[in-house]
Length: 276
View 1 (cartoon, helix red, strand yellow):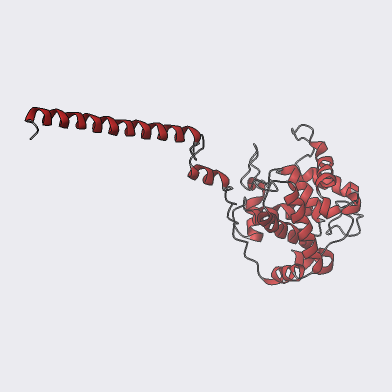
View 2 (cartoon, rainbow, N blue to C red; view 1 turned 180 degrees about the vertical axis):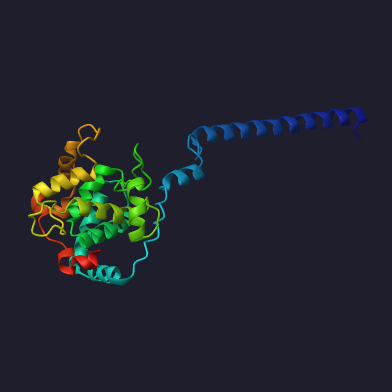
């Protein structure tokens, strides 16, 4: 039989060896983990949270289109005739293409604005390119709620104090900043300024886009009349022309400004009574 003291010493030596062996294994495991970590780049290191990336990748939503104005009677019939015509479809497509080409709106909003703008152009006998040029001159960023320092609002920069009461009786009381309302008001106002003022004019009730009438009409639309305090307002017609020649690529192609706007539009076919 082994003496008790020798047995206890043997047990202590085995325990020390076991502890040393276990400690060595732990050290080796820690070293292995450290080495692996040094070779591995964390997936999200130096990156923004995934949710943040997703939010930034989503474009801001398009403004919700305003409801269209109520239309009835002869005007509704005229609009139906216009919108069913191949010429309207083609001009609307070209107008929208030029709006998108500016880089300032989506295809969906361009289609909506083009529909209202070209429809009003045909109703009033104004070439769509003129309306396109006026819109760019008045509100180059196409901000529906844009307001000037004198209170003009919308795509066509219509003055509510001057026109809202008078035209709301004709078209109904609607939000004048809404694209559909603003274009209807603005094109109607412009059409009245583009009618010849001389007594000898063959038809003083029909829109004219001859150079003299167009120049005077655009000046009046801009408020550039005798006694105005607006600096360099006399350059307004040339700005409209420059925008058309530069940006109305689909509407005008290789034509000059006056070649592009010389073509008669739908109002002459419908008759003035229906257009009103």
